[in-house]
Length: 97
Image: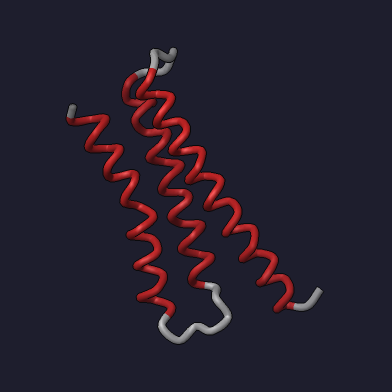
């Protein structure tokens, strides 16, 4: 396997893990908001935030390793910021209400 093939395979993995973590964060946030679980309120609030931030990092890495890396810093920062917005909304909803 060449270096370029390995980078493309790693990119696919980061892309898939990012979206899986994002979906898991949303599903857990909805489930935690609906019912009582054996976890503390802080744990219920932090688990979706941690998953969403992991998704942001994975999608940021996916964006940063794009083959045409002319403006990779700005593109990566935008991706991480946009992917972090749901965790900020969840934090406000969960911890301030």
